[in-house]
Image (cartoon, rainbow, N blue to C red):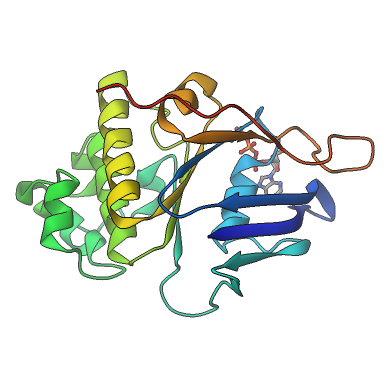
Length: 219
Ligand SMILES: Nc1ncnc2c1ncn2[C@@H]1O[C@H](COP(=O)(O)OP(=O)(O)OP(=O)(O)O)[C@@H](O)[C@H]1O
């Protein structure tokens, strides 16, 4: 279980949210929804250990996130190109955080022919698969998927979310799916929380409210 307890975070001494508690169970997809600027990305980065909260703690299995070694909570960027060295071929990018299991490479649909290409020579959906496999090679317990299918067409979107649903169910990896698209989260997430602007700040909503459980992915 990944838990953010009593979290406050923001920039330049100005919190975006405060006193926020969120739990991400293993093997489940939790949606995080909210308007632009509410702090969804910031919360996702806090949970991944990439942004230090102003207050509160992030616990994985009851212990603080490790300060060294591969990150057990891997953050997937909306734009995978921004998180890849453009001068490296895909094969080198994939082995950055560990050596991907060949079974996982098959499961993520990554073709051997892609390994010699540079990032700009793959489509957005293909790049996102590479990004997912690279994250899985680090052996994470959780993934934070931040708007990862926003730029993709519906078919590519569905493929990625079927893949992530399989990974969650098979490997027990808990996934935080961040999206401004409530209908997408209804389809892909087991449940969704809403992050209101200024959540927990004086005079604002105390913490995100749980929304009804999401519907299953279409076959
Ligand atoms: N490094 C930074 N320095 C200063 N302000 C920042 C920084 N990163 C984000 N912000 C600001 O924090 C606020 C919340 O940003 P964040 O990306 O977390 O929101 P979001 O809910 O994910 O928004 P969106 O849905 O548009 O991606 C925004 O006003 C943004 O400009």
